[in-house]
Image 1 (cartoon, rainbow, N blue to C red):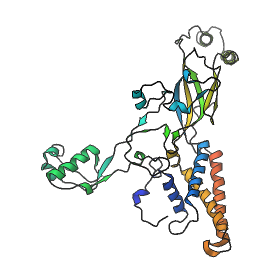
Image 2: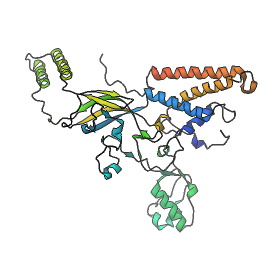
Image 3: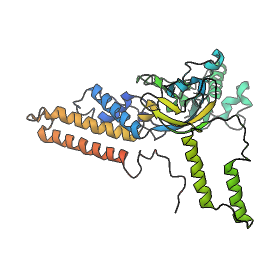
Length: 390
């Protein structure tokens, strides 16, 4: 990489406001960690990109997902094949009008609207006295007590109005008196290319780097809609619950909790044996979910699915684990290259190559153990336990 001086603002980053927005930016961080640009790192750019890709694939296998809810129409079900969940996010096979398609409504009616990034703001880095505003009729009413103080924030409309008024009325340019806020979440990369700014809208269920809709990892729950209302007064469950209440609250003898629990389990087993409640089987490779018994053509219903969906690649590359794992793989790659010249003092000799190889291998093993088992499997991306029984 070229030895250039980069502004410090390019490195000021937090976990949720990361400057890592492309593969190129993450690759720069990796080679800098290995000593570039002061020393030459014997690794090709494609090798680093490959290592980042491997890290992303492994991370998304165990972490890096969001919980989504999908509402689908049983008419989308293909007999003996199932319903393809990733297609539910798309506008294909849809009977929606053109207007509703343009408004980002999908056949799933899922929570996948177009997201509008936050507006751009401007920071005043040089105070402007109130005396200047008194000479401008369009601004004098808004700036009566004080002008602009240092570090004051302005929205884009006010910023434009101030700059235009000062230029046309006083012939003064205030462009150097403001700094634009760096909205990193206002940038979006397409197929790994350089991030473009000033994005008006984007679909959060679409991964613009891989140019495909986000994939479903697993289905955790499924509920079928009912058209029979909420009449549960004469159900077996209601009768059992009522008898249990009488037993404890009114002094009569009825079902105890153990009997109620036993009979409730029997009812659940009965639903499965008689197929009164649908069971599901999901294949994450084909993205098809099959239901048993399968929906009938003349029996239409709506169902809701709770599923875990992969995060888009633009979010995955921001994860610190991905950086560490890609760095470890790059150290191994550099160790292989330098080991080929073990008898030459060009790169520090055989000892240096073996050290690099050992470091990368040990870090790789540690990171894999952290992801697979660790104190918090999935790097803390797993939901916490909701209740405990002591």
